[in-house]
Image (cartoon, rainbow, N blue to C red; front, side):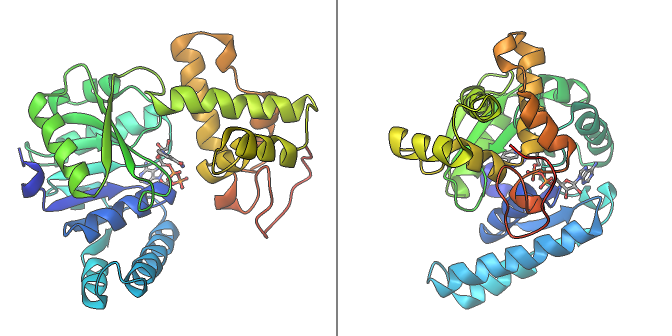
Length: 295
Ligand code: NAI
């Protein structure tokens, strides 16, 4: 198994909001990155946004123009899981659905070299269960980045029941190589950050749904009243309302307390395709299509 400094090739699966940012970080840290998505348009969007982001950082003087162009060249888009066979570390950032993730882990287990570490960027799903779907549970780990990955300073590392000390140590120092601060969570639904954050976001939806306040008053209240940089409804839009709903369902099913039951308004927004900033409309509109669902 590769140590953190030996991790040279990183596979990233899912080129959406999170996967594209994770690919950018790994490339900027000098790794060869293999980026895979089921949707080819997601790959081209990701390459365009990574290139623009790296060039912006170079223009600000964070690194040289040459280093920026080298980082962009280190990212290769691929179209099958088999293309990841030589990766030292694979980071999965696909849809937040346990069955879909398990299927992918089974496939990765079959095709990657025996030493490859398999990490999931899941927001809430059990790492122990993802590991159990493979024949290498000691090499499966949660590597939970925050949105947007190049900016947010935290990685929450989740050890499954069988994750080895060596794999934990390698992923912890690799995360530090990406410039991040690490916290370690036990493998319980939602881990540390989303266990605390998602009930707050859900409560903000309940406040909106029951007419306690307007969306602007709820967000301004939490920004100025609790010194959060962004209100909970705006933050939910940035995370993706589909992701918030999936995490709440994992909390509700896993912890069995009705306080995690998703607010009907959040469910309705997701049903209507109002998934947040990535779709141009969620609780707020971001200059694209609107919808008939009104808070
Ligand atoms: P997204 O919807 O922006 O991107 C997901 C991408 O995965 C899409 O491009 C989709 O085409 C691709 N995909 C789906 N199934 C696939 C498969 N079987 N094989 C290959 N590609 C597939 O979602 P986002 O926000 O990037 O979230 C991805 C993961 O990261 C989820 O597990 C989510 O819970 C987690 N996460 C999300 C955060 C957020 O703030 N949005 C923060 C931290 C973790």
